Length: 114
Length: 112
Image 1 (cartoon, rainbow over the protein chains, first blue to last red):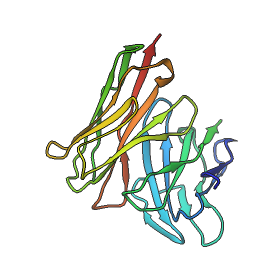
Image 2: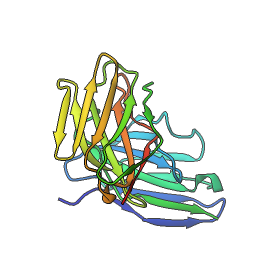
Image 3: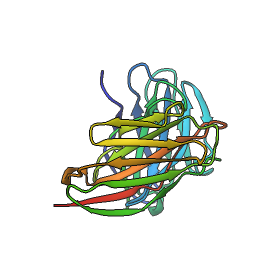
């Protein structure tokens, strides 16, 4: 049973470009969370999704950021018109059970904006 | 929303000594409290968790205690080893919402 798979592991973008980060949850997991981590800081909640539904996006900036988890395929976090402040590690986690289940983290996608 | 506070932010101990990290939470309905370890450049990984129907759980050198009345839980690492050096995060679910909140992390350094 493969773990949570994230790609790309490293992504470099210039200001104004778009970044797409993908996350495939563990098999059997239908709950996906995205977190952002700045260097030497904690994990900041961004969005919680289930298949074809955004359950809670209260931690995600209202502009330039969007997330989806389609019926088929990975969850995608999309950042449009990236700025230097978007540089961070973006972690995806999946869970078999909302709220009371263990979160299984992917290895993260490290975005660098030049 | 849920507010999870974690202390201390940094902790240095001599090898063999114990380390204790504390977290407090605000949502009294929270019922699941995990601890994650994150090594430099790696993903957070669960090391131990506790549910609200027990007060303490142990796994070899690691233990977690929970005080539901005071709304705090603690991570205890005994006989620390250099490989315990990492950042440790507590977490608590916001039961009334849909978020899993993490503490701000404790950077533990075990000095050989």
